[in-house]
Length: 348
Image (tube, rainbow, N blue to C red):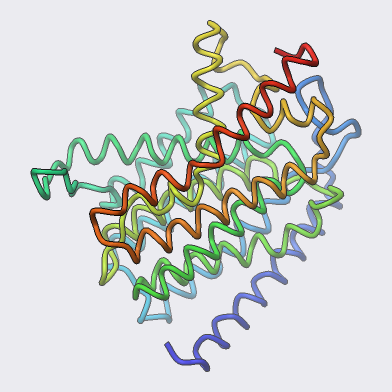
């Protein structure tokens, strides 16, 4: 990729960031309000739905990509699958913002949106098993991909509880993924990641450090869904296929928080579909740690995951498990710190 091409790409993304920002301003005026309650961190009614800007910027960009950017195209069926699935999750999550579906309805709608991706062929089916080699298992691959998309979509949604947290994590993950795509010749992942980053850049100044608007489910679910799909695309459809583990490594801090919380609540026989304030980042905030500091810490977890991804791609195959473990290294320390502080204050 030439320097001139890079400048053109960045200018295009700057335009999309402006489109996102304009739509976010519009959503502030619409005043679709998120009312405070016992499980939320804010204490004043605040507009939500700012994720509309992120969605619009990405979909406009992906349409241009489909029509004109031949160097970064997928095969038509897969490309249309990305577009249809993205539109589906955007509509589902916007409806959730408007009418606040029960979790079961929300999950069913997410499954329908994820199925649009699977039907188009956007799923992992080749598994490199130690001592065995490549195994082609499409049925198992579809099931794993469905779980992956649903878990990541909801993880970003669950983590969107403090100003800038989910948006900053998405931005850093997308920028690292774009860098990895460019270095590896994964041009679809490179460009699509830049589009997602552009949308978030237009939104983030309205949400951090002081929130004039929240991204809402339309933003958080969409960001998680797109990052999950990009992980699949990176591992299957680029000239140089990348490891499926890269996006999980980038989102290790978020995925760990959600998985740890689900396990902890299951062991305590709590209703897992019931809204709560028991995530590690929420416990930390309830203990008195500054919300902006927590958000920046989770951004740092994502950046650390990105550095581990770059290491993962450079070391020999036999050393890659070390990079995988490294990306999780900060999490036990953070967990012990939060739980000890929460116990001292009688929160758990």
